Length: 214
Image (tube, rainbow, N blue to C red; front, side):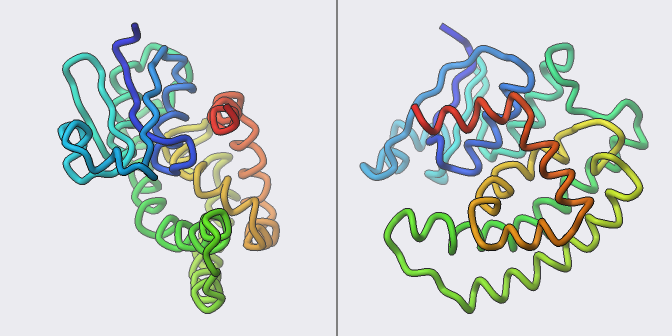
């Protein structure tokens, strides 16, 4: 049995982020599906793994982690000699990677995740989309993508010339956006659009999406 376990649901963007890192690193792992409709994420057994009752939870032997971005960083450093590097080759570039990871979490995702909720998840759950919230967050995301468009004119990927965690962290929200009318925001930024096409075509990401269909 693999010492690495991921507890979550394949439709969760945070779970998808952790899975993407494991697949990029080609690390064997056990996926433990958490039935959130049944409230399994609020039961004592799961709260011992993540006291906030949110997915994913992660185990590597006796190490227990939660928060998907922390999990991906652990995977990238602990398994540095395996699979895709995911880290930049110098201290200065690593600093840039940290900057763009912060940008993803605090600038990009704040708007993108709200758009995903309104246009991807709400219809899935039979809920009504709030058009005012969509309009507000599309305006916010467009401004963020303007910055990305400039950055991607300077570098093939956000941190440096190779695919890193800074790019990987965007994948779950981008996947949702591509399936909504907000895709127009990505299409209207040519460099962003090319970058999105590049990173969403990665074989490891394809495995994450395939897991949703099992």
